[in-house]
Length: 330
Image (spheres, rainbow, N blue to C red):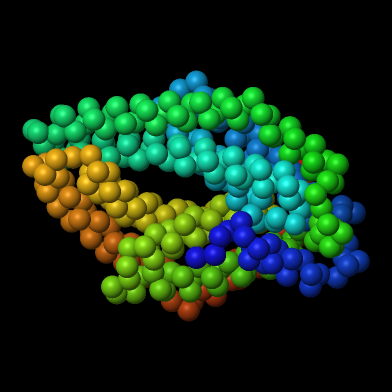
């Protein structure tokens, strides 16, 4: 799967903007439609503010809720940089992504131990106490590593440096100007139309019989990126994206359950002895098979028909005719 932050995604944004008329200036009720650049920067700035709040909270406490909120806020901000990379300074954005991806990995490690302990506790095995204590120690160590990274992040103040670069225009090339100046409505339609087609193609492959687990995992990542891109552009669609986003979230939940089974199995293989390992691994394999079946059934019901594809395509083409300066994100 191509990296969402690679040149492939930059090419998608460039292609979406390149076909727009250079003198496009749509107006409704004497109000000019927002440009791609102004919309992208307003959205990203609010998302970065939320990341900063979540990092501060997680630096104080590495609880389950703090890990969840941190991971969601970080994914959404990184997704905003990936959705319209031509609108942001290359150097500072690269540094932001690199630092936040490290935080995401460390927060993910903490979360994985939480999931493993939750799954094992639910099995109610009498001999699991020692394993749970061992996992808690691992979790505490991972949380300590994350806490140190979060405090280093706060000390570096990368958000301020990124905002300064955005406001100064540093790191932009002349070729980016057309994309920044293009109407955001046209940009959104082109990007989301491409992503709808890609999602349906990937989904068809992921739900095929005997599809290996690693390909289902790749589809999970792609579906998550698609949902966060829809959320990023949602203010342009009034409420019309709410139902599609919810349907994607349902699919993501099943895919997440499948991934959790694989993650816990990997942890158990590394941490437990033979006596308890077989019992837990057997239960996880059974649960994973059921979740894969549930995912295939749910996807077939929601996404497998030509009518569903047409409905999605029509939805992302129906952009509102004007924007607002109200709060940009739900």
